[in-house]
Length: 198
Image (cartoon, rainbow, N blue to C red):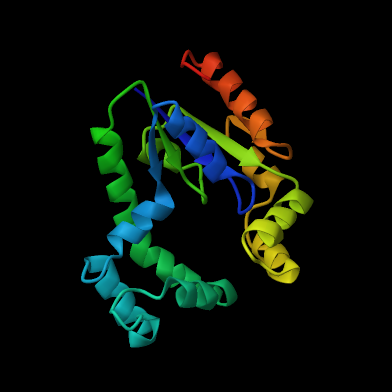
């Protein structure tokens, strides 16, 4: 079974890509979904986050207030580092477990924060990056996700650039066009490695 990472910054279309791959029957493991799961109320990661940041990060029902945490770490590098130290090990272990249990010809791991060491950690065969120009990404965030333009640009600026991401992956899939164009590019990559496309 092939193991392939799908990287991509906010607004690039990573979810559109994994939705397409899922529709073709491939296993999708989404690091963001895994992160939500391992920080469920009462879990070890949840307790560690509560200990580190206090009850202010909890909603009325005891679950993590993810929006509030995002605001904290977006403006505070030290808080972001602490969050990552607490959660990354739990997330990595769960992704590895799901990969080991995956069936079929390929499993795709959506990793927004893809780093070179993920290749060995998850025994990846390849890493692909879904990328869009900053202007297209900003337009998507403001038109479809209710971001203000300033917030959208700030989020993009806080992430790896397209050039930085391109340097650490095997294939770049540009997604400045429509869904059909994205699907066609994914099919090209699937055929290249001997997997069935659309």
